[in-house]
Length: 499
Image 1 (cartoon, rainbow, N blue to C red):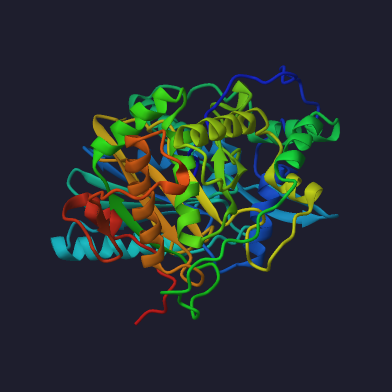
Image 2: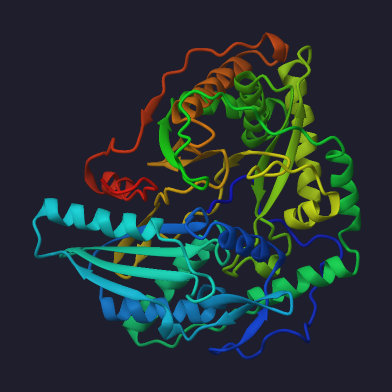
């Protein structure tokens, strides 16, 4: 959500004791403003450069089963964006500074669609059109707030909420906070009960805290760590040229989903425990090998997101906290798999201890070589989704969420493992201008094959490791499943011109 995966929320790091902020924005009504965070500045810069891109949209389809009062639901939505101000902000530059400006909660667009009179086929088609259009529509961060909502009456006791956030205001860890607050506020409104207390901390507090720590040199040691780790920047990955679409816009993206045998994941988790580490670490080590196998590049790096909420004050705050960390790798063919996993474990643990330095500050300070339109240091993201699941109850009914596809890509390849129907599956995004979808799927097949081989023999030198056969199912655009899950996966934004 976002794309957040590998990192976890930790306890307060040394030197992060609670502080009273004189600059904290006590007034939170429309017109209030604060200086944007460092991460928000990078999202702003990207959106300004590629205004047609929806790469940093976070569209989510929510299925509510059970009776829903739409008026109460809309009131609950506006109450939640009142509590979490970043969701009703727009942005502007003044005197070289990016400032977040608050809208009135009533300015959040909440559109209603009643599809109940239509036939089943027409309802499905209309809902897909609503979701697809919304997912692919970029935000104008200067003019509109960072949240848009559609309330879709699908059947007597089936309501779909299509809610779209810009990543500048929302990350993966924000999702359970938002939906739990929404469910709580909806229930309270139905019962005529007062709303809960305002959050103790707000996103403006984080922005001030972050800038103060950097200004006071609190992250100098972290900068020294990354200066050492990234002293020899790897070149951009040389992807195979097969299947590229040179006519695609730079920001365009395609998506495929891969199902895999859960026994492989169980074996890999057991192997990771035997190495004294996590499945994420083992997966990252093997992903590096798969990238090397595909590209032939012995020196490379992978990006991975960490939650960035190392201070517990931010646990219940909706906003953009996630930080991207760079994991470099140099191929050494004689190293056993188990030793590679141990090395990767040390790399990840050190990164975890040094995750507060924003990626943008790292780039400004280290000034790595930059190739036009390529991400510095890394071009592929490896994610293991471990964010808490949102609440499953809503009023007297149930709530289920599903991320929609924007049709835009953040990186050349994003390799995201997450739960689907209770099982681990792969969501595979590629940038078609640089990486053909079949090339991305080839990378995924190599990953799972190497994971199976590595799990079977941790003593094997990585240079001798060959992918084992692993049965995988592949679902591409248009390969829709029946039922409501298939309907959600049909909500796919598309960069291609309409036929």
